[in-house]
Image (cartoon, rainbow, N blue to C red; front, side):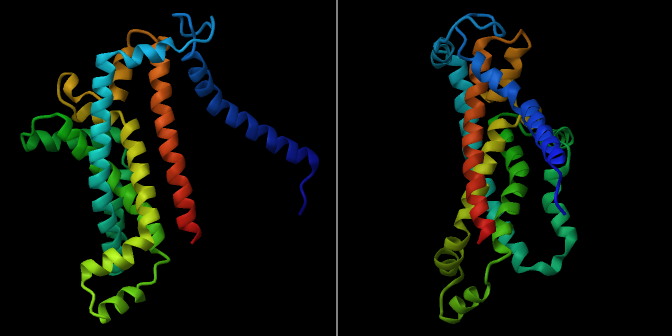
Length: 263
């Protein structure tokens, strides 16, 4: 069945409008981050002074370091646990859909619900809130995403080579290091990049599980704090940097994941 030219034109028009609705505001934000003037909505010439201002802002650099620490540590832990969980679930498929539902629940539970639950849990254990509680919360949030990406690769994994390695006398650790890990490594890296992106961008869970003061403030929380007093070109520049980091990591993750699924 062939589509008429009018139908094709209509579908393309809708597609263009959808992408314009999604990306024109982002493009405007990035463009205004290079605005020379102090008004965030009136163009008055090209300038990099707002990026230079961020580079010399000790408060911004402090929260950027917090964000990097949270993202790197939570990504490392979530990648390790998520990979092991994915392998365990694929090797023991008899647990059924109930276990899968528990694993992937953090992906579908609203952020606000998960944030309140984690805050209540930390309060029940009498944890002092700070960067460590944000890291633990991000591990809970990211673990399911890493597990999902790695499992996509394991769906086509030939488990007979693991059995062959064991028959040849290799230990479980050697088999994992020399046989399993090289095969699933692209998926592990893709999951790690996705977890890093989510951790850098995440606001609601970090807001609920952070302590008082700048010592446990992340970049999304800092942007929210700044925007309450009005949007400035400095906020646009900061948002553009966060977006650039997120898009870069997400693009790399998608490229790796596409190769994983295609194998």
